[in-house]
Length: 114
Length: 113
Image 1 (cartoon, helix red, strand yellow):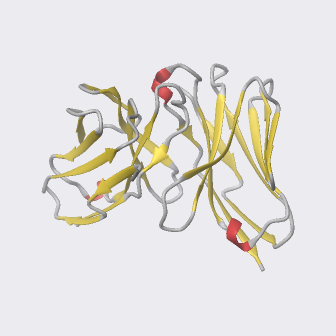
Image 2 (cartoon, each protein chain N blue to C red; image 1 turned 180 degrees about the vertical axis):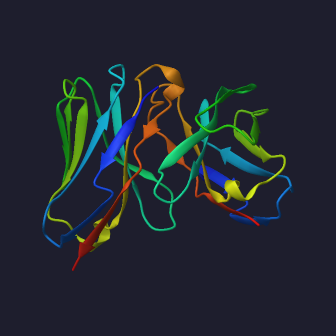
C-alpha cells in the first residue's frame, strides 16, 4: 500500500518568515495530494490540494509543488502569521480509485513566533 | 447544513465496556471513513464505506466494527474497549465526484481506563 513520509515533525519560524513542509510517497499510482490544517482541538480542514497533472498551485500565501518523478510534494507558506500555527498533514491518494482513501503523513507542528 | 457531526464529543469507558460512536453527514456523500488520531501518528484509517450497506477494513480495523445502514450515518462500535483504544476518533465523508477531498467531523475523544 501507499506510504507517506512527512518532514519535519516540528517547525518553528519567526512571523514573516517562510515555512516549507515536505512529503514523499511510495505509490506511483497516487495522483491526488491534499494538505490539511488542524488547529489545536479542532478538526482537520483542507487548505490546498494538487493533482498529478499540475506541478504547482498557489492560493494567496500558500503554495504546493509536486515532483512526480521524485515522488515528493511540498507545502510552502510565505509571510507566516501567528494564526498559521497548527498541525499540517499531507496525504496521497489515487484519483478515481480506491474509494478515495487517503494515506496521511504523521503531521508537522508549525509554530509561528510573533 | 451542519456538514459532518459526531456524537458523543467525549466519553470515558472502563476496560471491557462497549460503545458506539455515531457519525452523520447531511451532504449526501457516498463515501464515509473512520480514523483514529494518536499523538505523533497522524490519521490512521480504521474502516470505510463506499455506500449504504457496504463497509471495508482500513489500516487498523482490529477491535472495531462498523455499520452503514443509512447513507447519512456511519457507526463505529467498540465491543470490548481496551486502553490501547484511547484516542481521538474522526469521521469524514467525501462525494462521489470529488471524493478525494474529505470533510471531517469535530472528533470524539475517548478515554479507556
